[in-house]
Length: 70
Image 1 (cartoon, one colour):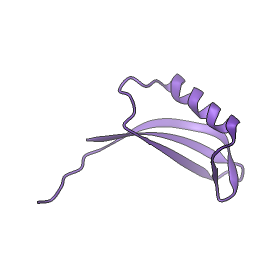
Image 2: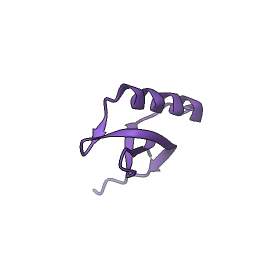
Image 3: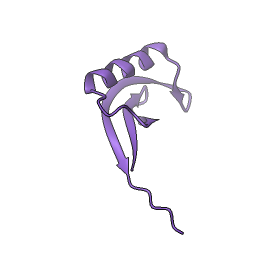
């Protein structure tokens, strides 16, 4: 299984943008994700289509089972 932490933001035009972080800690909390998202927005280092991230929407853990065909 592969786990990814997804932080969902809205951009200044209202569209959503997802930031995916591979292999998050097992005990990551919503409060930690919110704090990280706030720092990302404040720093203004990520843009999408020339637009900055304006608001944190949600955090979620995505679990995917990968089967390699032999």
